[in-house]
Image 1 (spheres, helix red, strand yellow):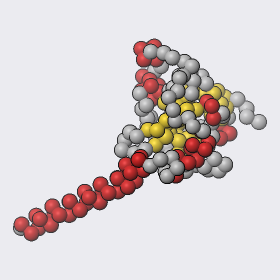
Image 2: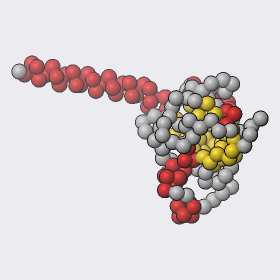
Image 3: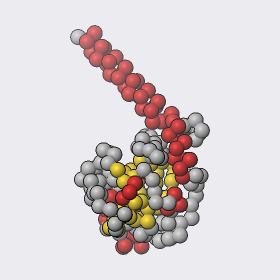
Image 4: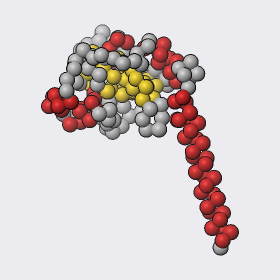
Length: 188
Protein backbone atom coordinates (compact mmCIF):
# COMPACT_ATOMS: atom_id res chain seq x y z
CA UNK A 1 0.00 0.00 0.00
CA UNK A 2 2.88 2.41 0.70
CA UNK A 3 4.11 2.07 -2.89
CA UNK A 4 0.64 2.92 -4.23
CA UNK A 5 0.35 5.90 -1.84
CA UNK A 6 3.81 7.16 -2.81
CA UNK A 7 2.93 6.80 -6.51
CA UNK A 8 -0.25 8.89 -6.02
CA UNK A 9 1.68 11.60 -4.17
CA UNK A 10 4.37 11.60 -6.87
CA UNK A 11 1.73 11.92 -9.60
CA UNK A 12 0.18 14.89 -7.80
CA UNK A 13 3.56 16.58 -7.45
CA UNK A 14 4.34 16.11 -11.15
CA UNK A 15 0.87 17.43 -12.07
CA UNK A 16 1.30 20.50 -9.89
CA UNK A 17 4.73 21.21 -11.37
CA UNK A 18 3.32 20.88 -14.90
CA UNK A 19 0.40 23.23 -14.13
CA UNK A 20 2.77 25.69 -12.46
CA UNK A 21 5.11 25.66 -15.46
CA UNK A 22 2.16 26.18 -17.84
CA UNK A 23 0.84 29.12 -15.81
CA UNK A 24 4.28 30.67 -15.53
CA UNK A 25 5.11 30.31 -19.22
CA UNK A 26 1.77 31.52 -20.57
CA UNK A 27 0.63 34.13 -18.09
CA UNK A 28 3.19 35.28 -15.58
CA UNK A 29 6.49 35.30 -17.53
CA UNK A 30 5.15 37.46 -20.40
CA UNK A 31 4.28 40.17 -17.86
CA UNK A 32 7.98 40.89 -17.36
CA UNK A 33 8.70 41.40 -21.06
CA UNK A 34 9.05 44.85 -22.52
CA UNK A 35 6.68 45.99 -25.25
CA UNK A 36 9.31 45.19 -27.89
CA UNK A 37 9.78 41.64 -26.62
CA UNK A 38 6.11 40.87 -25.99
CA UNK A 39 4.25 40.53 -29.30
CA UNK A 40 0.88 40.86 -27.49
CA UNK A 41 1.47 44.58 -27.16
CA UNK A 42 2.92 45.36 -30.59
CA UNK A 43 -0.32 45.78 -32.59
CA UNK A 44 -2.06 47.40 -29.64
CA UNK A 45 0.78 49.88 -29.13
CA UNK A 46 0.85 50.67 -32.85
CA UNK A 47 -2.91 51.20 -33.01
CA UNK A 48 -3.20 53.21 -29.80
CA UNK A 49 0.11 55.04 -29.65
CA UNK A 50 1.63 55.51 -26.19
CA UNK A 51 -1.59 55.57 -24.19
CA UNK A 52 -0.45 53.36 -21.29
CA UNK A 53 0.27 56.33 -19.05
CA UNK A 54 -1.27 58.35 -16.25
CA UNK A 55 -4.27 60.04 -17.79
CA UNK A 56 -6.13 63.07 -16.51
CA UNK A 57 -9.78 62.59 -17.32
CA UNK A 58 -12.06 65.44 -18.37
CA UNK A 59 -14.91 64.16 -16.20
CA UNK A 60 -13.96 63.91 -12.54
CA UNK A 61 -16.48 62.65 -10.00
CA UNK A 62 -16.25 61.11 -6.58
CA UNK A 63 -17.10 57.44 -6.22
CA UNK A 64 -20.21 58.51 -4.29
CA UNK A 65 -21.33 60.63 -7.27
CA UNK A 66 -20.75 57.70 -9.64
CA UNK A 67 -22.73 55.39 -7.30
CA UNK A 68 -25.71 57.76 -7.42
CA UNK A 69 -25.64 58.11 -11.22
CA UNK A 70 -25.00 54.51 -12.29
CA UNK A 71 -27.01 51.35 -11.76
CA UNK A 72 -25.46 48.68 -9.54
CA UNK A 73 -24.30 46.66 -12.57
CA UNK A 74 -22.90 49.73 -14.31
CA UNK A 75 -20.99 50.79 -11.21
CA UNK A 76 -19.55 47.29 -10.69
CA UNK A 77 -18.26 47.12 -14.28
CA UNK A 78 -17.45 50.73 -15.17
CA UNK A 79 -15.92 51.84 -11.87
CA UNK A 80 -14.83 48.56 -10.19
CA UNK A 81 -13.53 46.90 -13.37
CA UNK A 82 -16.02 44.05 -13.25
CA UNK A 83 -17.05 41.72 -16.06
CA UNK A 84 -20.56 40.75 -17.06
CA UNK A 85 -21.64 37.21 -17.92
CA UNK A 86 -20.69 36.11 -21.44
CA UNK A 87 -23.25 35.27 -24.15
CA UNK A 88 -26.29 36.60 -22.26
CA UNK A 89 -25.53 40.31 -22.32
CA UNK A 90 -27.46 42.97 -24.22
CA UNK A 91 -25.22 43.71 -27.22
CA UNK A 92 -23.44 40.41 -27.83
CA UNK A 93 -25.71 39.35 -30.72
CA UNK A 94 -27.07 42.79 -31.61
CA UNK A 95 -26.80 43.70 -35.28
CA UNK A 96 -28.57 47.04 -34.94
CA UNK A 97 -26.77 49.87 -36.70
CA UNK A 98 -25.54 52.81 -34.69
CA UNK A 99 -22.91 54.32 -32.46
CA UNK A 100 -21.91 52.77 -29.14
CA UNK A 101 -21.25 55.37 -26.44
CA UNK A 102 -19.84 55.15 -22.92
CA UNK A 103 -22.68 54.34 -20.49
CA UNK A 104 -21.08 56.61 -17.88
CA UNK A 105 -20.44 59.79 -19.86
CA UNK A 106 -21.90 59.43 -23.37
CA UNK A 107 -18.61 59.70 -25.29
CA UNK A 108 -18.79 58.04 -28.72
CA UNK A 109 -16.57 54.94 -28.67
CA UNK A 110 -17.42 52.36 -31.34
CA UNK A 111 -19.49 51.99 -34.50
CA UNK A 112 -21.67 49.06 -35.49
CA UNK A 113 -19.60 49.08 -38.71
CA UNK A 114 -16.58 47.70 -36.82
CA UNK A 115 -18.56 45.28 -34.64
CA UNK A 116 -18.19 41.60 -35.44
CA UNK A 117 -19.10 38.21 -33.97
CA UNK A 118 -15.94 37.00 -32.20
CA UNK A 119 -17.49 34.06 -30.39
CA UNK A 120 -16.06 35.39 -27.11
CA UNK A 121 -19.43 36.05 -25.48
CA UNK A 122 -19.08 39.84 -25.39
CA UNK A 123 -19.53 42.56 -28.03
CA UNK A 124 -16.35 42.80 -30.11
CA UNK A 125 -15.06 45.59 -32.32
CA UNK A 126 -11.91 45.67 -34.44
CA UNK A 127 -11.42 49.44 -34.04
CA UNK A 128 -12.73 52.38 -32.01
CA UNK A 129 -14.41 55.32 -33.76
CA UNK A 130 -11.40 57.44 -32.85
CA UNK A 131 -8.27 56.18 -31.11
CA UNK A 132 -8.41 59.30 -28.90
CA UNK A 133 -11.75 58.10 -27.45
CA UNK A 134 -10.05 55.07 -25.88
CA UNK A 135 -7.35 54.88 -23.24
CA UNK A 136 -5.41 51.68 -22.50
CA UNK A 137 -3.64 50.45 -19.42
CA UNK A 138 -1.72 47.30 -18.48
CA UNK A 139 -3.91 44.94 -16.45
CA UNK A 140 -2.03 42.29 -14.49
CA UNK A 141 -5.03 40.93 -12.59
CA UNK A 142 -6.29 37.34 -12.65
CA UNK A 143 -2.76 35.87 -13.03
CA UNK A 144 -2.30 37.19 -16.58
CA UNK A 145 -1.26 40.28 -18.48
CA UNK A 146 -3.92 41.96 -20.59
CA UNK A 147 -4.54 45.43 -21.94
CA UNK A 148 -7.48 47.17 -20.30
CA UNK A 149 -9.62 49.54 -22.38
CA UNK A 150 -11.03 52.66 -20.70
CA UNK A 151 -13.10 55.63 -21.82
CA UNK A 152 -10.63 58.50 -22.34
CA UNK A 153 -13.19 61.07 -21.16
CA UNK A 154 -14.22 59.62 -17.77
CA UNK A 155 -11.78 56.74 -17.15
CA UNK A 156 -14.49 54.09 -16.93
CA UNK A 157 -13.53 50.46 -17.52
CA UNK A 158 -14.92 49.14 -20.80
CA UNK A 159 -13.18 45.78 -21.26
CA UNK A 160 -9.92 44.58 -22.82
CA UNK A 161 -8.21 44.57 -26.21
CA UNK A 162 -6.55 41.48 -27.69
CA UNK A 163 -4.51 40.75 -30.83
CA UNK A 164 -6.75 38.03 -32.24
CA UNK A 165 -9.17 40.22 -34.21
CA UNK A 166 -9.86 40.46 -37.93
CA UNK A 167 -8.13 42.66 -40.46
CA UNK A 168 -7.60 45.51 -41.04
CA UNK A 169 -6.36 45.99 -37.43
CA UNK A 170 -5.96 42.45 -36.11
CA UNK A 171 -7.42 43.70 -32.81
CA UNK A 172 -10.44 42.58 -30.79
CA UNK A 173 -11.88 45.15 -28.42
CA UNK A 174 -13.84 42.88 -26.09
CA UNK A 175 -16.28 45.23 -24.33
CA UNK A 176 -18.90 44.75 -21.62
CA UNK A 177 -22.43 45.54 -22.87
CA UNK A 178 -23.20 47.27 -19.57
CA UNK A 179 -20.39 49.74 -20.32
CA UNK A 180 -22.12 50.81 -23.53
CA UNK A 181 -25.31 52.48 -24.74
CA UNK A 182 -26.29 52.07 -28.38
CA UNK A 183 -27.50 55.17 -30.20
CA UNK A 184 -29.41 53.72 -33.14
CA UNK A 185 -28.77 55.34 -36.51
CA UNK A 186 -28.56 54.32 -40.14
CA UNK A 187 -24.88 53.87 -41.00
CA UNK A 188 -25.34 54.07 -44.81
